[in-house]
Length: 241
Image (cartoon, rainbow, N blue to C red; front, top):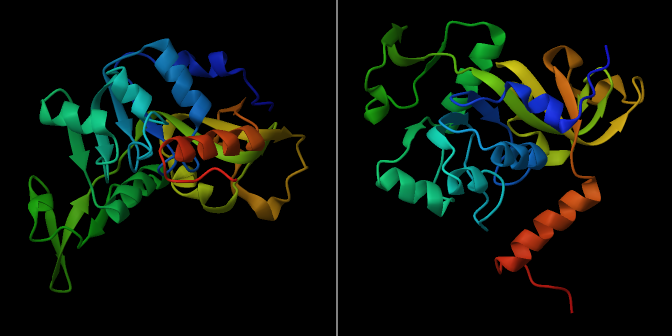
């Protein structure tokens, strides 16, 4: 089955009020073109699930969705890197739901694996206990973390073939493979699209069975230039003499 789609076609399921997972971490392994298209589409009241909100250099990845006030609820592990998100939260304009990073990923994995939840000792004796069931196993208490699932998941890979098999590159793998499993519809944005059979099976990080659509993102060179310019403009990197 050929899963290659134009980006506009892959966006048809993104509607007001949707719950969306977005892979990546602080601009690394982030589906940039998909995020830009969501912003362009102008849908609102979104619940967005992402491990962290935006690159601290600003005006990048998820920041644009906060700037356009398209997000009503953000489910995450960390949100302090995006000034717009922080200000909206302080003003009571958005809801933020926090989970420790390990619990966050395990909740998504549970959804993808069809589990009813996972047990975690992380958060015992803290505010994380509120409104959660506790279970004792061999005399030790655990919190029941329920599955975390989305309507649509946008992930970012390095290469894909026509059947949706995804190869990742370096640390850009981060949250993308697990998020691919936990949505009703998964869109994979990639730097390069190749013929089926061109990806070594040992390098497939997400099998095509989990992917519904593959879209062309920025080339690797374009992506590296965009990220490099971002860091330079923010003063974190110096231009070469």
